[in-house]
Structure formats: C-alpha cells, structure tokens
Length: 409
Image (cartoon, rainbow, N blue to C red):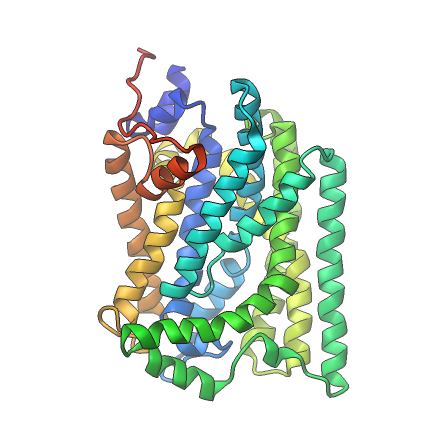
C-alpha cells in the first residue's frame, strides 16, 4: 500500500480507497492533454473546422506547428479516450457484480446523462463533441458485454479494416469524378461565414453550431463512430483480462507494442499529414485517412505502452496526470468552455486571430491549470462537479461530496 501511495502522491490517495486503477486515471489525464491540443485548433478557427489552414498564418513556424499536431496528436487521443471508455465499462460491470446491484438500468441512465451532456456541449460550445457518440457506442458495449476478449479484438480489427477500405473506395470514386468530401467538410466561403457567426451574438454562435452538426453527424455515423467502437472493443478486451491492473507483468508485450507502434504509427501519421497539408486532391486526402485509420491506433497504443512503463519510475508524472483524469468529464467540458470564452463572441472573440503556436501554447496552459485545479478540488471533494451530477443522475440518489477518510495509515 505504501508503494502504491508513493506512486500517485498524497493529493490523490483517495484513488486507493475507491479501488481505482491509477494507470487508468493517469492515462485518461494524458488523453485529456492530447484532446485539448487537437480540439483547440478547431475551436480557434472556422477554417480548421472546414478542413483548411488559416489563411492569415502561413509562416514556416505556423506550418511546423500544424504538422506536429497532425502527426503526433490528431486522431490518436480520442482513440485513447475511447479505449479507456471500453476499459472502464468492465470496471463498472465488476462494481455492479460486487455490490449485487442491477447493472443495466444504472448504465442506461448513465448513457442518457452522457448523451444529454453531449448534446448541450455540441449546441452551446463545440459541435465536435464526442460524449454523445460514447453514449451511442455504450449501447453496443452493453449488448455485447459477454463477448470474449479475442472476439472483441477481432471485431475491432475487422471494423477498422472495413473503414479503411471504405476510404480507399471513396478515393477511387473521387478519381472518377464522384467526390464525396463535401459531405463532411465545408470550403473557404463556409469558413468565413462561420468566423463571422462565431464572433457575433449567442444566437448566431448556436446557429453556426447547429449548421455544422449536420456534417458532423455524417462524420460520426459513417467514420469516427465506428473507429470509436473499435477502440472501445479493444478496451473491453483488455479490461476483461485486467491487463492494466499490473502492467509490470506485461513488460515484454509493452516493448513489442512500442517497437511496432512507434515506427509504423509515425510513418502513417506523416503520410496522413502530407495528405492533409500538401494541397493534394481529395482522393489523396481520403487515401491518407485510410492509412491513418490503420496506423493511428498503433501510435496511440505505443503512447500507452510507454506511459505504463514510465509511471513506476516517474511518480511525479503520475501524480500530475491522475487528478485531471479522475475529473475527465468536468475537464473535457471545461476545455471547450474556456476556449469558447477566448475565441467566440461568448468572450474575447479571437477566432482566427492567433497563430497556431499561440493557440497550441494556450492549450498547454489550459491543461496545466486543469491539472493543478483538479488536484486542489479532489483534496476536498470525492468527485469532479460534472462527475458528481452524472453520478446523481445515474444512481438516482445524491452522492457524497467529501472524500473518504484515509484509513490506510
């Protein structure tokens, strides 16, 4: 017990009493960092949401920042978050079994709460919301909860390959003149209109979000949603095997994941980034999407394997990442709120006025503030504010506010 508490630090000792797995919380905190680095670019620019670079920023440093974010962050961290959603699903199943409570009604209420939060988030703050997608995918997890780990992984691989083949076919159709890219991205004219709306009144901001949701729903249903489900299924399989409970027992596997994931994942990400930023045809971009669908999970897995190997030797890193990970829902929504206050008419209306480097620096600052704030909050509270509300809705009773007393000493 002393060894475990030294890893996570005194500020997060309640993780032990709640029987939480430190690695899961820390990985979730790391995922939050990557998500804000990616999402802020879309919140800071109507052009980025339309799949274009901001025309006001074309210096070499601007392009270097875009490339770094695209190669090392984009499409990796929502997969990590999805993997952890699937893993946490198995922990919830175990918790219900241990307490003898009915799991399905409780989980359905949780999914309903997530969906409502996601819907409000998409309309008010960020149309690229992922919570509503998790709510829908959660229904699938509930339906297949008795699936074996091997079958779950095979289905995830098959789903990913089918998506990749779909993009290859779309690339072929684009070469033949049937370009479908307009269904999921706008052009420069649409981006300029979006900028004007987002700098305006509350009603104009919400109207712009609703307009974007039509395209985003297409993206979620046919592309990102299945990718999220595949990552959740892998998390479900890993959770059934309890592989994160004691990563030290699986060092050889983690090394293999690193040896394959980093070179293949980075090469695939570079190809994808070139397809996005080289100004090539939509067919080339779709081919890049196909490659990224297959290789991004490998790079995300390499990140996970590296952190699991590093955490025992870097307790300070774990102690920084655990608190924001325990308050992931609050922090995820908080990131969008802060960015909206900076970039839209809700606040400073600085959309498309800051360089990519400045925008990315703001993302790092936001996460640093959230990490520090989460640690302070959890010293006096058992859950984050939004987690507390969702737990109330899920269990139909008011949760405790204060953390449990530490009886381990």
